[in-house]
Image (cartoon, rainbow, N blue to C red; front, side, top):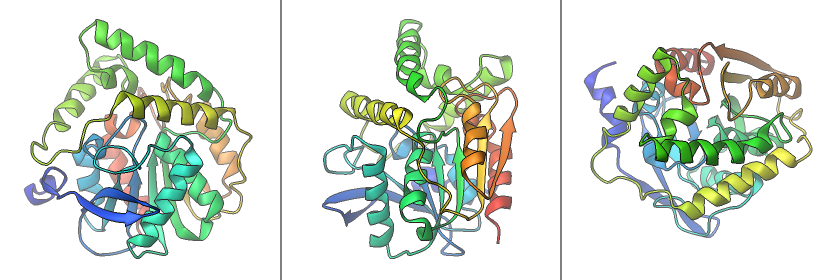
Amino acid sequence: MSEQLRTRGRNSPTLRIQASGAEFAYREFGPHAGVPLVVLTHLGANLDSWDPRIVDGLAEDRRVIAVGYRGVGDSTGRIRESIEDMAEDMVAVIHALGYDRVDVFGLSMGGMVAQAIASRVPELIDRLILAGSGPAGGPGLTEMTRFTISTSLRAVLTFRDPKALLFFTRTSAGKKAAGEYLARLKERTAARDKPVTPRVYRAQLAAVHRWGLQQPADLSQFTGPVLIVHGDSDHMVPPANATELTRQLPNASVLVFPDSGHGVAFQNQRAFVDAARDFLRR
């Protein structure tokens, strides 16, 4: 990757757009070419939580648009408390940006939001990538709250970053990948997004818990290509969710990375970007 590409993630300005009664912060990367790719981040994340190597790599030959959720970071409004409401916001933002057809990459909770978009407005999405995500009512999703809180407390008590324990395996390869990922997140030093507040974290955990309690959504109306990416050692969203997603989505393929946790895309950022670009290429 060239140095010009490498600096996109850490230098891109934060833009804002009015939609659905709020002002949403977003960032754009890459050339105005091809179908734009909207990327939706994970629980407890702001725009600075995106791995710069992932957004830079995906933006090598297309426009990538990272959108902040309502009430998170520099986005205004009251934080949404359901996946469906977050999806409604993202549909409004995409239309406000002037698009009627996009690709979507949803990471963890972002993948749940992407599914809600696909089930309600299937014509809006052309191709869909879901990484470390699960369907409504998916196996083990209601345990995410307990696991997230207990693991975060353990990280604080042992003076470690919670993301290292939540997203990565504890093997030597996983620990190395965690350290490199945390270092990459510090590359952007100016105009950073506002930190995620405890209130946001609680609301999003509750939204994911409710998603885990729901009946499965009807995803059969979305017939576009889907790439499902999962780690074989994901303790936040068990790998069985990848299997369940393939059952519900008629045109899905699965890529499972070995020795990988919930942050499967971060832990395998080079291989993930290669696979995602191959999948998105028309």
